[in-house]
Length: 321
Image 1 (cartoon, rainbow, N blue to C red):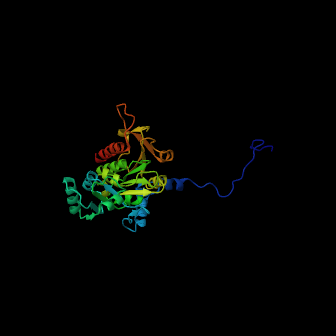
Image 2 (spheres, rainbow, N blue to C red):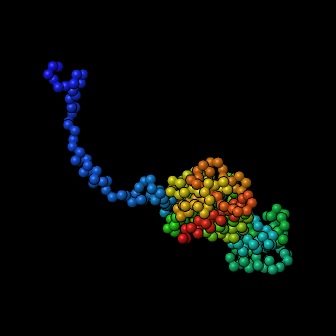
Image 3 (cartoon, rainbow, N blue to C red):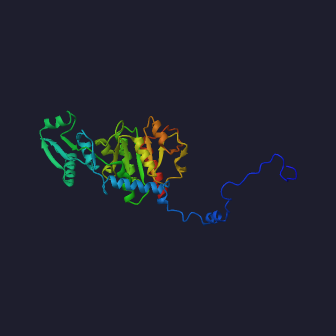
């Protein structure tokens, strides 16, 4: 348009709606901030909040107290027989329900010690015909002496967390993947009790159970520390992760050596695999970190019991600092 200052081809846009508000209010509100930072326990993604919620769930499931002990359905009593095995089992605190002595058995120091230990612990003494002891032990070499052991009473996985919370300590739980030798289970239970772990977790299938052999190897530790059994180990590990625990796998191919584990003081589930196969693939994938034990010799690997003892000692030492 002649005489107009508008550039040819330009379009004058009319403002839509209200004019742009001034920035003063927004800036002032921004300077005021969002208020004080919530406590860690109130922040939904913080480990402290997850641990608090896990504790609430554990208490709710347990009705405010420890869950009833779990017995294996269909489990039968076990027998330890032979004079040396019986004496060793009684010394170790294996929870025998009765001591059986065959009629006419010759007395010797081992038999006398077994009877004395039974009397001290209030265990029933039964003198039976030799043929009955033969039947109970499937004609084993019982030497006239045997003890009866009831099925072990397993804890619930939540009970292991409760043990830590009740002691006001960072949880330390040992989970076993594919450990089938009951002697290794006994040795691991003994190390767990010695180095302050709050329990041992085992799967229901393809794993050693708390048998007479495990009791003996644990040297009575199975009576002092809970052992829990779960149907699905991976599901249990995920549940512990949701509760704010760090899942640490122990394997010779780990990317971090045990002395370099920076999270030793955090809530931990230490997962131990079998000697031959190590950690299963899915279990390994569920681990937050894989650690290895540095060794200077040509030894290929340590057995599960020894490796767990070494790892628990290092974690315990770091926590005590």
